Length: 63
Image (cartoon, rainbow, N blue to C red; front, side, top):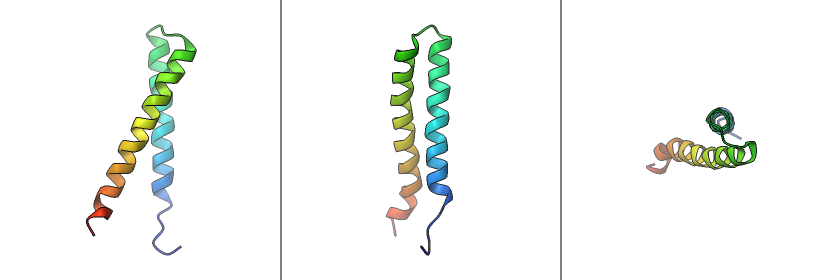
């Protein structure tokens, strides 16, 4: 377990959940139904997780 960073997965999960919550609440605020807003939030959560993961691993690939 040497060299394992605990904060990277925590940051990834926190970013994904916060993005899901924010986008879902904004969609509901703008008048979308809860089901559709949840689906849009889920897609935004996946995109945010992929972007965050790519940014975290960009520096490690060059070694």
